[in-house]
Picture (spheres, rainbow, N blue to C red):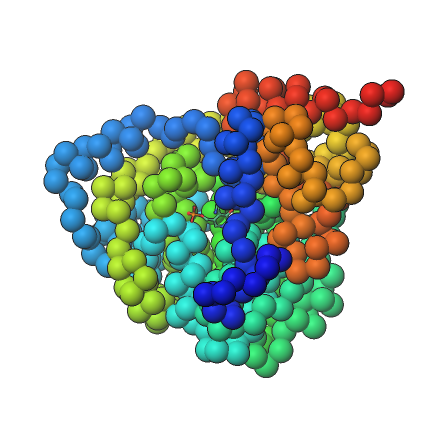
Length: 391
Ligand code: PMP
Ligand code: GLN
């Protein structure tokens, strides 16, 4: 938590500057290899880039439909049917935003009354916590505990109160790499049905699963009508800077979220929506190679980190791996990550900032493997310097 900022309202006090900005700043300052912030250091498919350039040349440069370009909404509907057998009406149930970040923000703004409670699993993606506060809602935490990042079912049951508006779920999960099991999703779904609450399900890493399978909670019985499924093109197509995300939700919920979205950004960049409409229709070979390629990067980094002396918690999904830093003699992730760029020329993310109680994640560090092989290998090489000299 940072010191009090004089002009900032009470809802945002204490959030400071996000850890991604801080760690990428240190990486630039020290010319470090950046395994911190989760963005690929390579571009997505050429044909997708060409589609964006073509859309600009063809004059698609003005505002588009507020809820999303119709061909993109159709492509999202086709993707939902193709991968999950889920049917969504493109015009009334699919909405496009400037990234999943805006989708989450707009959803919480639209659905929460001041004083409502949102159940979050910690560690959480940092924008959740701030978006809950900005919506005037209160977070209720359920802690995922290593090594498997399972939660105690009693904790989730106890977190639900008469004020609960929604459970905010993230699977595959950042930063742990956990893929929620069918049994866990069934438990969450049963509670949502029993207490008549919504589920906001952030599935931006839906295509990055190496063990098990991605199961949208909306595909479970009685859940389609109470789930807001969120995804983003950034992770799947390696264009995080384009910021094209979306929600799939029943018409009445979509109408509510659109009410917020129209006053936040109104619509998102038109040419990029054209390009992502093309991208979603890429063949099975693209999706197969994506996961195979990331699986190789995962193994390369995890093997290297283990060689450097860390205890590695191999992720089942996402493009992040957590390690325990205690075998190398460290026990404070924030100190460790602030020291690392200057000392060895590598940047990483301290996960304790994604918990309410910092002690929970203090012994862990997150490393992104959405990076090219020389960067992964170079980082592992540099990390060897951390080994105690005598060993
Ligand atoms: N959710 C999760 C779990 C993320 O890790 C991220 C960012 N990497 C986002 C949402 C934000 O996605 P976008 O860049 O589309 O806003
Ligand atoms: N979600 C990305 C990560 O976890 C970062 C997004 C951001 O910088 N806000 O690294």
